[in-house]
Amino acid sequence: MTFVKSFTPENLFSSLSNKDIFLLLDVRNKNDFSRFQIEGPFEVDILNIPYFDFLEKEDKYLSKVSRQKPVKIVCAKEGSAQYVAELLTGDGFDDVSILKGGINTWGKMLVPTRINEKSDKYELYQFIRPGKASCSYAIIYSGEIVLIDPSRNIHFYKEFAEEQNGKISRVFETHLQADYISGSRLIASEIGAEVFVHPNDFKNAVFSFKKMEDDHRIRIGKDGPEIRATHTPGHTLGSVSYIVDNSYLISGDTVFIN
Image (cartoon, rainbow, N blue to C red; front, side, top):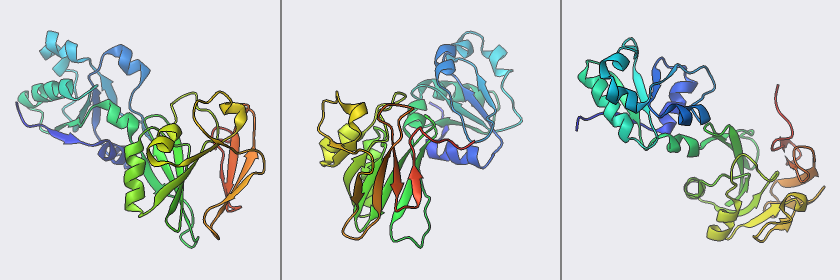
């Protein structure tokens, strides 16, 4: 097997954000490609040529791949990308790499960014999930970590908590998610965190939760930031927006920036 360079989903997100010049070659079948593909904050130069096309008509499809820029290859799990990368390398392409672990690693990836003022006595992080165009949040104060709308990437949140020398104590949901499965139940089960939700969305839930209704307020620690719930039905009957420290609004899918 020929050695082929690999890149992580974090590397890919950085390249997309920096507007690096490269061709993204997706070798999954056309149905899988149409259902879910890599997108970024800016336009992506992407080409879909299924792996089996390279198997059947190698020369024809090699000629469709640009030699003028680096080629980053993605597939479902990594094996097909490795095969196509070897074909390209053998045909004289000099800058070819593959997504480590396949496209599922892109779907699970979370990118943390602190979004509040450093002068605040607490930290507010946004976790961007580019593969699903969704966000989750963490509020950190005095070793306590509160999560809002976490994904099922529990390993990431555990590692984040360790890096912050903190413990996840509570989890809040803005609403019952329809586009992905929340990680609240798993976090509650594995870590013992309390889950706070609006009962209108979670009345049939099979896990324990505490009600977070209109104007319900919870403070982190004895003198940390206050989280205030505002019932904002519309997207769902139980949609809740959270006002953090009377300064930041986390609205779930209720408010969007135009």
